[in-house]
Length: 485
Ligand SMILES: [Zn+2]
Image (tube, rainbow, N blue to C red; front, side, top):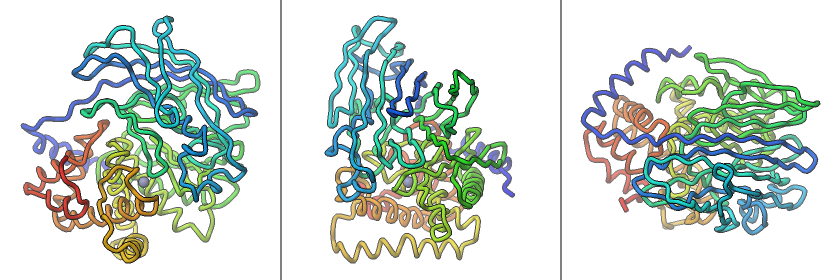
């Protein structure tokens, strides 16, 4: 149905004219993670190690490396990344802690000193014995174990699935602000990471079916268990989901394999079709999906859906007749995140609007391209404008800033309305202002220029202004209350 080749060639032509004479953003040296873990299904503990090869790609020497230890946020009810009124749904069987324990850190067998610090002990600082100079490489081995909590969120288990996300020590991003050491906020998706290459080996009981980032390159039987060897190239995180109950179906679009993991119900095929069409639509509109596979997994996840590279988790309770429209909307949204968050990354703590607004607008585009403009308008009115207006009526003249740090939103509702709804309204308005041709050229150039990198609001404004050849800063100021720092 969708042909990609012609569109792709046009993008390349556009790119060379657009970026001619302009500084192409630097691609960071890609770091490598090799993670080997055994899963204990009774204790729900992952035990193993992580080898990380890191290159200092900054202009300054580094005395320490910093990692996020997101599982530690789940150690205490006070830091568990849920709002107070969500705790019962997050822990239907009551709170039990989850955490990560670091057992040792070594460089070539030589132990290094480290400290676990920050809010909820969610940051790991590894002291290097000698400064790592610009361009120098280092290889570290971290021994660790991870306790998975009974939480129906990104990281935890419920009746059906074990959600293994934000689970291993992941390097913090070093950018012009220095190291980004933000805690695991309860609002939004408080993550920010660089593209890396991953090889993950996980030993699991053979009854489990595993959905994951990357591709499975080997499955070996070992004493009644299965060792899965997974590889993810050019991805900014690595997530897995396991269940003994999963059924799996697959389909294909342009050599990309689409998988749907679901349970005993009939909407696994709907999720599969939506994901397949969404991949086709966004590939054609923005630039090709650059990986070999994408999975949509029904999950014990009470917050709608959550995106990870090559895999999205979807609340399994949506797989039914009464909620199939919502299921479609959420699958399309999470698939769009593969472009905005996955391939083009951003600081989701300080500038969450950038990936969420583009993703929410892309969801509308899915309806427009698949069903026509009338359908898009209906969805826009019913699911976006209606909720935005209701919020505005109830809140009066509250600060309408869209671009702000996660912990500066009052609650998830305010975050949702401003970042998703008002954000999508802004992008829709931008399209109207620029006209279709320029708008879609902006999106293609932005995708191509920041592919496998992290972009900022300034970068997005810059691409808009460059492609449209006019000043647009006042639009960003008006809609987002965004001002350059
Ligand atoms: Zn989203």
